[in-house]
Every structure is written in C-alpha cells, then in structure tokens.
Length: 226
Ligand code: ADP
Ligand code: 5GP
Image 1 (spheres, protein in one colour):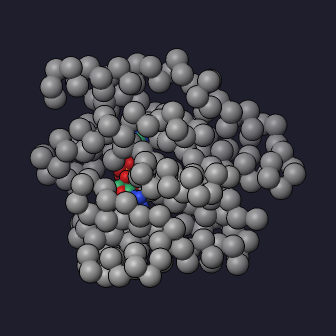
Image 2 (cartoon, helix red, strand yellow; image 1 turned 135 degrees about the vertical axis):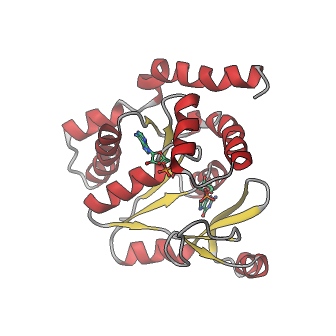
Image 3 (cartoon, helix red, strand yellow; image 1 turned 120 degrees about the horizontal axis):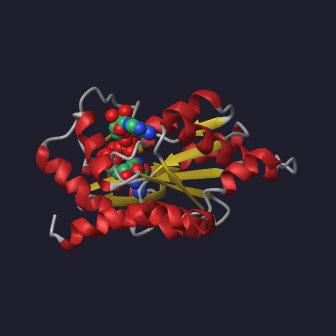
C-alpha cells in the first residue's frame, strides 16, 4: 500500500535540504516532480526540480483532470501534482513524497485522509531570514515577499499531523526519517517503538510549548509592520 507523505514549509526553512537528504537514505520512496508555470531559477532544469510549462498548457492539464491537486501559490503562478506520480508509486509499491504548499496539502487531506502531513518550521524568524539570504537565490524584494508569506503559512501549522522544527540539520534529518519509517512500519503491522517515539515528539500536543516562541517571533514583526 502506498502512503502519501506531504511536506510543507515556509520558503527557506530547509525543506528541500531535508527532503534531498531523506530521499538518499529511505528506500521505496518516490518523489513527485510538480508542474509549474513559474520560470526556472538559477540552475533548475526542466524535469528535475519541476516541469516548467506555460499557463495554457497548465490549464489544459486542469481540463483533462491530470492533477491530484493544484493551487496558485504566491498569487500568480500555478503549481500542481500530476496523478500519474501516484499511479507510478502504487505500481512500484513505493511511498510517495509531495513537497507542496498549504493549499495543496489541504486538498490532498480532504481527498485522501490517510495521507501523512509534516510541517517544517524554522527555529525563528531571524534564522529564516538568515537562511533565505545565505541561499543567495532571491533578490531583496523577493526575500521580503517570502518572509511575509511565511507569516501567513505558519498559521496553518495546526492542520498538520507532525510539526518539525528544523534547528540542527542532522537531528531534523533523523526525525523526518523516523516519521516516514514509523508510519510505514505501523501501516505494515510491524511498529517500531524507537522510531515511533521520535516521530511522536513532533505531534502538536508534545511540541506546543517549543513552538510558541517561534510563532511569537513572527507575530512581533507583524505588529511592527515588517
Ligand atoms: P526551502 O526548500 O525550505 O526553501 P532550502 O532547503 O533551500 O529551503 O534551505 C534554505 C537555506 O538554509 C539553504 O542555504 C540551506 O543550506 C540552509 N539550511 C537548511 N537547513 C538548515 C539547518 N538546519 N541549519 C542551517 N541552515 C540550514
Ligand atoms: P518554489 O517556487 O519556491 O519552488 O515553491 C513555492 C511553493 O510552491 C512551495 O511552498 C512549494 O512547496 C509549493 N509547491 C511546489 N510544488 C507544488 C505543487 O505541486 N502543488 C502545490 N499546491 N504547491 C506546490
């Protein structure tokens, strides 16, 4: 049986870094390459990070019901997950990892409630800003746009099954692996107590106190109009 894992995070939290590391070590895990109408950035190549298509092509795929979910992200560009990635994962008896935004995550959860969702948070707003700058991929106005969007996205954290604070990278990689593997083993009737305990530490009821200061670091900037 294929389990869908949804990963969402404000841009710059380290989601791609974590997903890339986990994909290298967890077997039988397919990754869905999304379609988007946004242009490629930096070294991005068609068919690698995304399939880059025109708006007309995207709308044609919508009409032909080729998407499992799709959304307009950052108010302009379309992003969508093709159904065929789920079919492929099912044929190969693999799990499927989706890197999608909060709107897409809500659509998948509504259709396929057994999907497992993970929200990745940065340790605080200042660190998110530092990571966005360190990545040196975006212009200053784009960084500001992403920080504003982060504040809105973070409000959705409670809708996710697991919340992972990406502070120390290696710890986060191990915790994300524990979530994927513990869910897989439990669904296969072979639960692992150690992995489950690590995954359970990311449930809202266990992490509520830890995330309060993170939420405050974003709320403070809202009050000061940043
Ligand atoms: P996202 O995919 O969420 O937009 P990236 O994976 O591109 O974010 O990470 C943004 C930047 O933060 C990158 O330069 C990456 O190397 C760095 N980064 C990711 N995780 C950590 C971490 N735990 N500690 C410090 N830096 C990190
Ligand atoms: P970026 O342009 O920085 O690569 O991605 C912007 C946002 O779009 C990220 O939050 C990413 O998770 C989201 N995204 C990427 N692919 C999809 C998709 O197929 N569907 C949805 N709903 N969001 C996506």
